[in-house]
Structure formats: C-alpha cells, structure tokens
Amino acid sequence: MVESLREAIKEAEEKGVAIGHFNVSDSEAVHAIFNAAKKLNVPVIIGVSEGERDFIGVNQVRALIDSLKKEHGYPIYLNADHTYSFERVKEVIDAGFDAVIFDGTKVSAEENVKLAKKSVEYARSSGKDILVEAELGYIGTSSKLLDEVPEGAEITEDKLVKPEDAKKFVDETGVDLLAPAVGNLHGMLKNAANPALDIERIKAIRETAGVPLVLHGGSGISYEDFQKAIKAGISIVHINTAIRVAYKEGIEEALEQNPDDIAPYRFMKEGVENMEEVVERYLRLFNFLT
Image 1 (cartoon, rainbow, N blue to C red):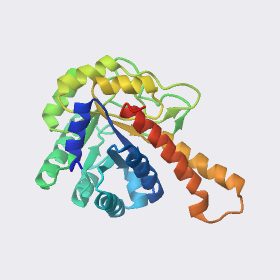
Image 2 (cartoon, rainbow, N blue to C red; image 1 turned 180 degrees about the horizontal axis):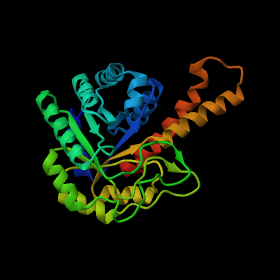
Image 3 (cartoon, rainbow, N blue to C red; image 1 turned 60 degrees about the vertical axis):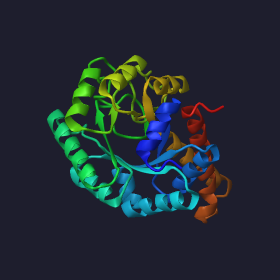
Image 4 (cartoon, helix red, strand yellow; image 1 turned 180 degrees about the vertical axis):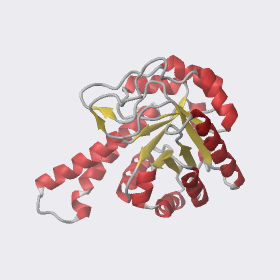
C-alpha cells in the first residue's frame, strides 16, 4: 500500500490518472466512498469542509478513516476541505489529517499569501507529512444546485488564474498543491451544463507553477473535460454536489416506497447505494477504467 498521500499523488501523476476526492457529512457516506474505491482498487480521498467537520467531528472522522486504513491496509486519505482560518488549519494538522486546504478567497491577496505560508510552516513544524493546498481565483463557495453562475465567479479571462501568478503564489507560500480557477465552479447549474474548462490554461499552470493541481467543483463538469484536464495536469478532482444529490434522492425514494419506515439503517441504505454507484462512476472516469 502507498503510505502517504504525497506518494499516492506522485504515483497518480506517473500513471496519468487523478485521485477522486469526495466530501462526507456522516459515516454512511464514508463507507459508500470506501466501498466504491476498494471495488476498483484505487486510492481515494475523503474530504470534510469546516461545516462537515463540525457535524461529524474532527477526531471522529479521523478515527474512522484510520480504522479503515488499518483494517484493510487501504490507501484512503483524509483532507480538511475549505478551511478559512489559521486556527482551523492548526486544528486539523494537530489531529493528523493527511492534507488541509487553506481557502483564502475571502481575504485580500496579501492576506491569502500570508496565511497560506503560515499554514505551510506549521504543517512542516508538526513533523507529520501533511500536505497544504491553497486556492487561487474565485469559483464560488457552495456545493449545491445553482440557478446561475455565482457572482464574482464569472468565467472570463480576467477571472481565471494566469500561469505566472500561480508560480508567484507557489513560490511565496511553499504550498504543496494548488487549486486554480480554470473555468470550474462549485456546485451544479440546474438547467445548463457547467462552463467548459480551459484545458490549455491547466497545462500551462501545471508546467509553470511546478506543483500538482487540484480541480474543485467537479460535479457539473463534462466527462470529456475531466479526462482532458487530467491529461493536462490535474492530479485530484473534487466531487460533492453530485453525491449529495444521489444520497438525498435514494433516501427520498426509500421513504416514498415505505413511508412508515422509521429505521434509519433501512431507509438510508438506498441513499448509500446510490452514492456508491455515483462514486464508482467518477472513479472509473478519473482512472481511465472501462
């Protein structure tokens, strides 16, 4: 088994594939994602945002991932998704997460650099091999169904990350991973396909910045764009909205069929199975499996 997330990313790059990153709010979702990955024998990353961590518990989700890794000897990793303050970065580094994303999209460019660098320095001082990721550019913040492109996340030349700016940011902060705005959006548009990715920009940023790239907002992206983006230099792909929708629809269908059922393990089962199917489909795509 590949021991560290850093090694898993390097191996994925060598194979020309990407690691799937899926967010959870409960243990049922963890098992759905784990089962799909184990079926295909590919590594997987479990993500928990600040809100998701508050709900499931920082140490509790860490213990659950550790138990799966230990019991099955499997490359499953834990990432602290979208973390907006140094205090909360410190919290997950101390808890032993495999990675953390400092999200500085809500602060000034100068503060983003300052706090990302501080996060990297703390991770290094911890003595643990914890990867620090940062975002550059704005792609919205919510993993949900959208009526329109979020304000400030318009897909225009001036909004997308320039390769030279990516390199400058990486050089100044020392981050291990970078999530640039390249035409992607958090969430899924309800009545239209999400905008196409700028594949040439992805390639140029990967070559110029010199660190693995992460694609956020994957749920609304076309399958063709995914594979082009991976070939261009994306090493990790985030999916959240799509599996939330699958989970909800499965539970709703189960309750519609058995409205008097009050046993969670019965009416949630269909939601978990729905989620597992969606995760498997994405993992096949990211790993170029038939």
